[in-house]
Amino acid sequence: MRWLLLILWLIPGLASAETSKLRSLDRDYQAQGWEAVGRLDMQNGGFCSGTLIAPDLVLSAAHCVYDRANQLRKPEQMTFNAGLRNGTAAATRPVAKIAAHPDYDPNATMTLQNVRHDLALLQLAEPIPTHEIDPFVLHGEAVRNGQVSVVSYGRGREDIQSRQNACNLLDRHQNVLMFDCDVTFGSSGAPVFSHLNGRGRILSVISGGGRWNGGQVALGPHLPPLVDRLKRDLRSQQRGPAARIKRIGIGGQRASGAKFVKVN
Image (cartoon, rainbow, N blue to C red):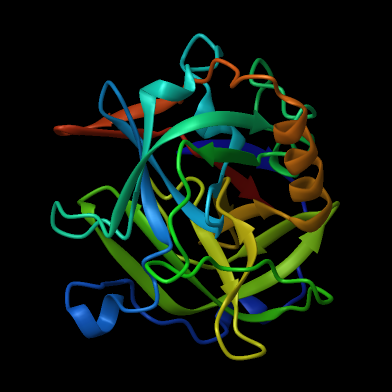
């Protein structure tokens, strides 16, 4: 995971808000409705989490599409496995195009500037019909502190979705959101959901995290303006850019190197 030294004062008391345990969605009834969250796989074994926001669009983190040399991987070397569970995906599609936010700098260390632009949008070679998998929509209302949830893949649970159905948005600073959610290697790009109006809406994606007052916090960017920019970038591409993923080895699987920060 990626780490950064970040000095911020959060609102007192919020870190002690109620949270739930991370649980695998290993039963059909548990995984139902979460199939749009999938694993974004790389040809050489690396992976991140990603989410369908349209039949042919997957949202993930920008640092997931760069390698250790900070170069982009070719789209055809990446595959999205929607709802992957115990080796079986609800749908599998190769990636055709990639747009990483232009203000994310893969050559820089992890900074607030990079965290708040740590977003990528990937266009699939073929749409996944909505009658098979229903994409999630973005949270379009004001961002408020309070309960959220996360669905992700990560170390020790690479082949199955896991969900923390109650963690908390603690604060926001310079369009970087801070959560007390349980994330690890492979959680990069995982969706953070608000639950204000029925089905979850994507509030952020996991970029990295750190520690604050002795506890771990996760970080992610505020989404709406970033996603609009990425959609325009995809439309302007004549063909997909080269793209790669940054990763750290985890046993037989390798997950992306999400960064974490220490918050004082």
